[in-house]
Amino acid sequence: MTTVDLTPAAAAAVDPAGLSVWPASTLPLPTGDLAVGGVPLAEAAERFGTPLYLLDETEVRTRCRTYAHAFPDADVRYAAKAFLCRTMARWVTEEGLGLDVCSAGELELAVAAGVPPERIVLHGNAKSPQDLETALRLGVGRIVIDSPAEIARLAAAAGAGRVRPKVMVRVVPGIAAGAHEKIRTGTGDQKFGLSVADGSAQHAVARVLAQPDLELAGLHCHLGSQITSAKPYLAAVRRMVGLMARIRDAHGTVPPELDLGGGHGIAYRPGEPALDVPALARKVRTELIESCAAAGLTVPRLVIEPGRAIAGPAGVALYRVLAVKRTEAHTFVAVDGGMSDNPRPALYGVRYAPRLVGRRSDAAPAPVTVVGRHCEAGDVLAAGVPLPGDVRPGDLLAVPAAGAYHLSMASAYNLVGRPPVAAVADGAARLLVRRETLDDLSSRDVGR
Ligand SMILES: *Cc1c(COP(=O)(O)O)cnc(C)c1O
Image (spheres, rainbow, N blue to C red):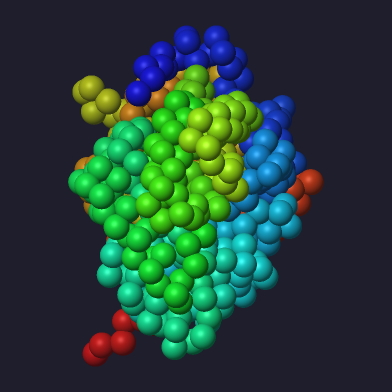
């Protein structure tokens, strides 16, 4: 992993206003507040309450376009698990992207929101009968096989329904990449995919080819998440093309598509690296053409599945400070959300760069630990971050790069209720997902 100098001085040198990890529309206001999508954050907090998530529509669309331009002859499928609601599905579809889903639930929502089923790919290391039934009924574009048993199950279900689904085989190419052990999926000995090293990928390919009810559309791999260098992707291209050549030699046929998954890294704090998408596209294309030429293969159609890199930087979380506690060694600033709306710090130890918004402060910055309101000591949003020394209850804190893997992983922990999501664009805010109420929560509790 790249080592980054994240001292305040180093960060300030590259990004004096500290806004590099904010949506491009972000503007400092004379009041000391920030506006995102033309909407002052304090105004949004007042209108929708806190905790609140804002999604900058222009940022989402711009990021979709960056991918579409960088990969003009590839299929770009937004990984819905990063964040999904009907409007998000509509935005990415309008920008020409498809969707990567991993459950019947995500799939039903996507199709109901108008995503053309043929642009959807279904993943999952343990697809339920309902997942497969829904995929066949709605006619998804690709189903990614992730275990041997799935092949016969899917073939049987497809044969009964007289459709011939296009499938991909999820391959473990044996490449370690990603910012944390829990998000590395490109190597053996984890639950995803079928290994090239032990031959289970080759075996699965042979079994799919032997199934008249299935069509082998391609090979898939997903190396992990929060990858900031193109190198692992280039290594993956070489391994996957090598596997395609072996498939041709063994079976006389070559799967026409190569899906390289997602995992494109973003900066959460000023000074952190992000994956350069246009550079990735150029390098992958060159590597693919060269590897295929060397192996005597036709270049397969490329598919990529970015999630975080589309939704993450477009989201901002807004919290109200509820308590400030000074111990001998630390100042704890506790906010009205936490691990129930953002489990990432507790899961992977990631840290954010919250900042005071909504008012001006001339107090000298001092390091604090921003914590959530939940009954877990690990409910820490950010440690050692500088906030104005006069930070106090009632203040607003905003957290950038909050659009991916927050709300999609949110829980009902402590029955706090999941926050609403509002879209901001051109000076207007509108609610996309309303706040989860106590009535929502208690309506499921049907025992007596
Ligand atoms: C999670 C996932 C993605 C997206 O990962 P990001 O890190 O959000 O880009 C893409 N493909 C598959 C199969 C995934 O599991």
